[in-house]
Length: 251
Ligand code: PEP
Image 1 (cartoon, protein in one colour):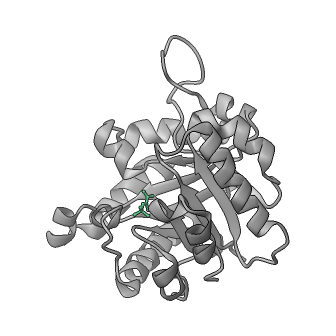
Image 2: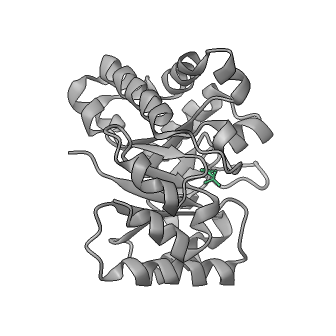
């Protein structure tokens, strides 16, 4: 049975003290709840160690938002997967459209990052998604297939068990424009079919596929009710504990 997950992506927001307060509030809110999903906080590198200290890692997972495509060495300013793992984080978000777009992360580079993250013992939340231009040109499936296959389809079945997919249409991220639940379901079903073709039906059925893009308490329930939508990757609404919990409890 696949897991439902709601993961926050704080992006480049909050100072360390602010992030610690937010993490404490989420941890407090989930502590005594019997939730129907796993909860993960994706936080800036600078926050990982401090946030790890205020969460119960058995209840709240911890993700970095990126890692380097090298393990160590003369790469000033970079943070490697083993460094992330050494903070106690158990996940890393890779392939976010902001990283692909602003920092030119290619499918090939992401393939390397995925390998290093898995080697370091991290689970990977791998993002994919089309731009509005690509959607309007009827290229959604081509884009998704290329992103997923070029960065992930070299993995073994054992490795695949540590991959979570996040479908994030770029036009819906931070814009207030959510994909309709039918639009999202259509792409999620396509992703699951792709996975089944490569890794078989059982692994495909066990893969968690998250939706991301202006997900909020008011639309989470409808999105999560779809058969292939197993939770959300949440940007803006993860910055307020109450909004984030409104999405967590939509399951
Ligand atoms: C994201 O950036 O991963 C995201 C889904 O952002 P938002 O929820 O703000 O659209």
